[in-house]
Length: 126
Image 1 (cartoon, rainbow, N blue to C red):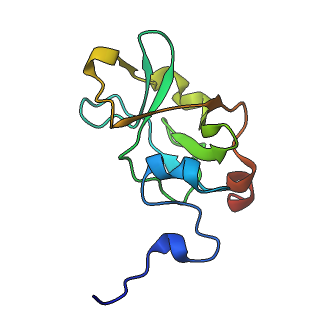
Image 2: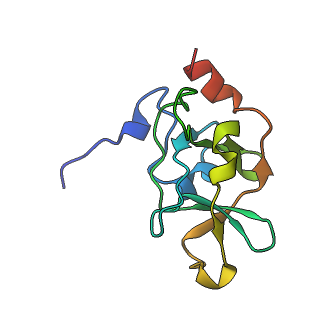
Image 3: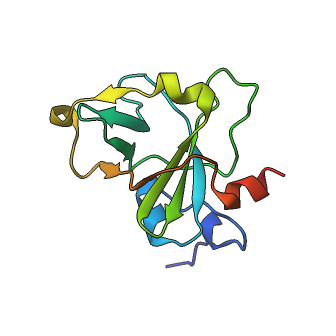
């Protein structure tokens, strides 16, 4: 089989292939959109108020754009697991999800809700 490099192998590329991979790669992070479209949820709040990320989502190497009406969110590595920062303009669009509708192998629990964007992303946005 011919070797095939991944973008994550590039020095400085912060985004592993999927959100579920971020907790296993120190200093990794990525942008995810916030969507209320059924079947396209990337992040959600369950019926008990817990935050979850769709582990199959592909994070992007960019930061939220303030001028967008729904700027999105950032997921990142933390020592405790997956971290999430939601742009303040996107908060009201966080969708709800019932635990009964969640596939256990698809959703990753958010270990840390961040008050500020992760430092790695702030540096990339400068």
